Image 1 (tube, rainbow, N blue to C red):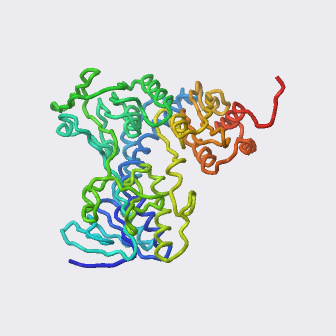
Image 2: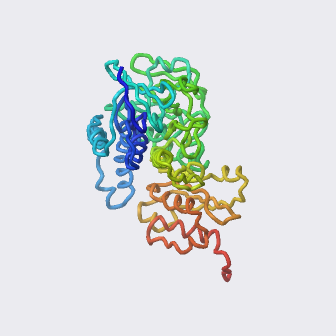
Image 3: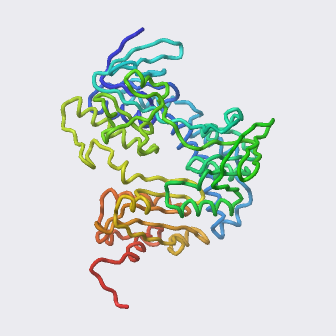
Amino acid sequence: MNRRETDVIVIGAGPVGENVADRVVQGGLEAIIIEAELVGGECSYWACDPSKALLRPGQVLEAARAVPGVASAITGTLDVDAVFARRDAITDGWSDTGQVAWLNGAGIELMRGRGRLSGEREVTVTDADGKQTVITARHAVAVATGSVAAIPGIPGLAEAKPWSSRDATSAHEVPPRLAVIGGGVVATEMATAFASFGSEVTILARHGLLGGTEEFAGTMLVENFRANGITVHTDTSISRVDRDGDQVVIQTNAGEIIADEVLVATGRAAATSDLGLDNVGLTPGAWLDVDDTLRVHGFDWLYGVGDVNHRALLTHQGKYQARAAGDVIVARATGRRVSDAAWGAHVATADHLAVPQVVFTSPEVASVGLTAAQATARGLEVRVIDYELGHIAGAALQREHYQGRARVIIDETRQVIVGATFVGPDVAELVQAATMAIVGEIPLDRLWHAVPAFPTVSEVWLRFLEAYGRPGVRHRV
């Protein structure tokens, strides 16, 4: 058994782990990163990148068909083989050679194998041949192992060999009939993608779609799905799933559903079951409970960064956490001042109040901050302003019969925006302006001076302000 020592150990070489290690090395410390699968992680090979590669062609085709003069030139359907080929290119054929080259260039040492905590500041790595290496960290261990798909305990489901999100994003064939169990981001995005490929898609959701967002977002999505041939069953319970030859039979309170494949997208579980947490007094399989500097409560050397802490299961938010964690590890190791007050350099304050997210469905759903219900539950004096995006010139020019809706949540006491939701075609780019307004706590009277260019969909910001009314200004009726 070999023994090693380094300044910082990072378990997990996805985008989050890579960013922790990079910040540590840029700060002058040594780092070893451990990975049992592909460097680049879930996002690069089975989630963000491949899923958006599968969704983009359908979005482009839909947009083209909605513009007179272009629609008449569209005579065919998607070339699904070409879509899959482009997805394969984006994932580099599930090769991490390029990612490894980046690690080498950044001065980060990679150790391939399964990393498990085996003591204080100690990680034991077992490689593919069973060889073990014990590494001791002088300063910190950062766990960035992410999450895995959760499979509910529905009778017969596991034996029916369901698709996980990995199977869906790496598929090379389109099932004629696809059943999707779940109503969240993965469920709705993959339903959108496979419907664009020609699958007959049925969604089975326990409640509505996109729980946790504004209710109108899920409602609009259901309406649009149904209008475009996707069957949606909400408030649906499943009693049993069986694979019968080449088909899957699903028993539900809405009747029997028959499909060729079934995708399970009901949530995520912490990827900590085989991490050795019990060796340091923690519970295997549990999410890591961390403070705002991403340090696990009760430890001065252990950090949980990204999905594994369950604060915000989004790649961009995990990378944000990683920058804070890497920098604070360096600060603590070198005796520098730690900036851990709200919005400081070493904290992930945005996790609580300003998490942006885009769901790349048809229509898109982009949101940030609090919903109206969440803001009210926090005791804020809330004002809600809604606006129909189709009334904006930029939207009407973008496509015929544009349908979309936007909402901002205003804290009346401070007269600042605390939440925003946009639903409609191509609304993803609107969310960053809302994020900046929330993080910067920009007063509404100052936002009047942020003039949106005409004709763009961003003109919705002016419409929000007009609906709210300019403080101190009276208009003649």
